[in-house]
Image (cartoon, rainbow, N blue to C red; front, side):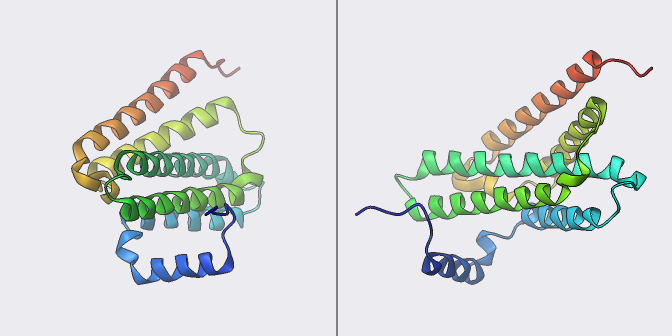
Length: 182
């Protein structure tokens, strides 16, 4: 039997019904906080582009969403690949959730896009540093429940913090290499 990559209306209705029937699988501290970020992106998008606040808020918010979307999909993919043979339903559910988180992040970035143009290299370096700091604190204080899937909490937390440390190192290296202000 060949499965279509394009979901049907029934597939989407089934997904919505499943999410509403099992919200604890999809709603976590990360989801709530990222929904807040997306709502923040929508609020920021309503501010005129020329407003000074846009130079400060939009790039870090976009970077927060990038880290969230990519991180969610990487973790969901790891769970799918590692555990699918033994628990296919749970891993597919987590993967669907990871795709949903990626789409939520992409929607937030899309809303911010008009406010992200023509920003300096240093602005993006600072935005990356802000995102790394935020997500490091989030991972340490409000560890996302996905991290503990099938008892892998310590390994996944270490991997996430390692990836965030690499992101911090990138910020430092780029900051040092960036041309100075004139």
